[in-house]
Image (cartoon, rainbow, N blue to C red; front, side, top):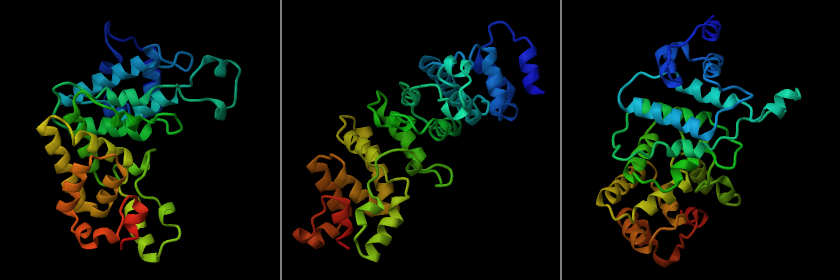
Length: 293
């Protein structure tokens, strides 16, 4: 019914897709086919899939409206609808089977980078929902997954950290960085021949949202920032992480390219084990760290 109405009814002059999408509301736009029908009214189809600049513009507008407190349509359905468009008309024209059709070749990392907004500081629930929708629903089998947009250098690095901190603070069943493509600090491959105790320790941390080497590389890079606010926020994030999983933080800092001065100061502040073992325990890899227990 809704799709039929969208196809037949005219739209007010000058109305944009985002305006129409938000006016329909989350209840009406919670279906991918409905969002696709709406996008079709604005010229987006399998024959004419969305481009990078178009998607970035949509997401940037939604991010701005979210920060302003405006009500949005169903952002998860919106992202799934964008992903559903195939990359070329030729595939449709020649009636290829569905498994051959590929999602539109969008740069989803640049979509995440659209959140790099000057002077933005606060993190609201609507912005988090939009971020999660992108991270969880964008294609996995691509060269650069959407999450890699977080691992780049941002102009507003403090906001980058605030967004990461908010995502890291979510319950595991809502969001977990380990569910996304990326490099891990600890895997079971690290302890294949280890004792049951060490394997149990590795199993305990490998599924944790902090088990991301990419994340730690961002943190240690920003730990050397000229901005005291950024350095302090990195320290606050690591403080919280230590309380959650001290072992994972220790291993992450050993894996990331961190300055010796920062590493020495941080580790000796939080890990008396380094003083206790002295030179008898070499912690230059997660495997070596685990074997210290």
